[in-house]
Image 1 (cartoon, rainbow over the protein chains, first blue to last red):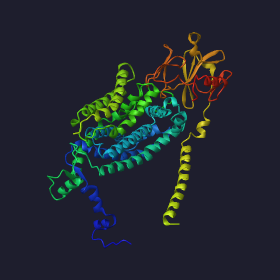
Image 2: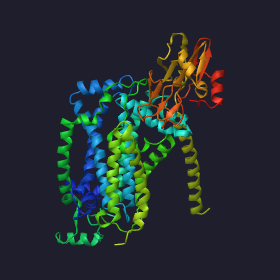
Image 3: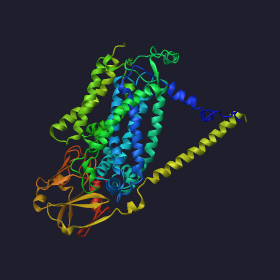
Image 4: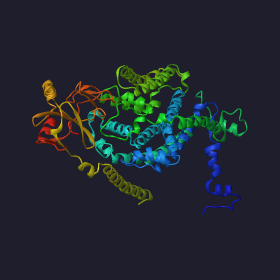
Length: 404
Length: 176
């Protein structure tokens, strides 16, 4: 039997049983963050908060949503939207957060790319982050099925058809995924399960892993400067807060983090209250109909760039290009051959590569929304080729980079 | 036996039990995701061919999927080339196109333009001719022909008749 003494306070009682002081020290007051950072370093917290909003709004939606092909549409558009008090609030928070979370994920990703935060011991941060991106994508897609409108049905049809893998013609696999010849009851039910249980569990596990990957290499800083965190932490603890290059995660860094979060939340709730419609496709307000394709199908904005890489080619080549786009970001730490882990503006050709990639992603996104005709087809085709070209060029230009 | 051997044995025994259990559970999980027997049993549709009009596309439903039925007018029949003739069905004295109305690219429903006698898939811009042959990528092949059996002046979708087996053997369509 372990030895316990009579507690002097509730704090002491808990501390003897759960070591709360040690936990607080490890997780907050002695977890060190570099000082030389900017507001882009707050995106992780912005994402965590947005995920919390998704979780809470999702719990309330879950109480009235019915995963049945006959009642799903009405349970969302009638019950939740008109009968449930503040049902509209949960739906709009959920829809807007699902869209905005991808905007912040992209900012978070491109911040990492710009500052080289995927290199020299930070590879696991990048890889776990990309796994989160993939699970968030699956979560967004499965959630998009649930209102069972026209876009839900046809997105479900098109995306599950991708698994027939073109000329491999794996119809059996597609029917297995759907549990039917077409998206129907079995399909809606299993995607409901994925959306509310399996994928959120995976996301929460991966968020834990993502935080853990930061622990040893620590957060990067604006100059990519390498320094001894232990020594800087000692300085800070001795009272030389000004001379130290680090601050404590809580409450010092957190206070700044939460300030950025509050600005973000003003923007977020502005969207929720006044511009929620951008996250609500009008076509999805028609109930699912397996005998009528909407005239123009497109995914939500955050999938447009990879959709545009699929679209301009014939099926098999399109699928290969699409597969390439899905995995290539994952490989970034290994494709960047340069020894320098510094911001792009110090890296010559890589700086140009970074901005070209960003512009390329925006062009692909814009073209993905356009109908596949005439000039848009042509621009989309060349943008898709440039995307592949840029990634092929990456190892070459970074290999040629001079060591700083 | 030494302690090490004993633990090694226990470890291997557990590994064997867990391995069998894992494979068995994966099998059960896979089978639970299969389409249900009731879903598979509802896979037949019979069409009476007497009501269709020339050059008017009618969409029927089979296994939840749209099936295009297009009766050709005598002029349309006359304009078919040899390649196109392979894809059409003769039922009684009339000629029809009967295909799955799902684009072979990613499964959108193409629209029919009776004036141009052609199909356009709005999703990714693929086009098909009046018999469902591809005329513009991305679709990799013509519209698939569902399994059918001609019985007098009716056609049973979902059953594989002689004519359908011949189309399959000739590579005109893939099994769907």
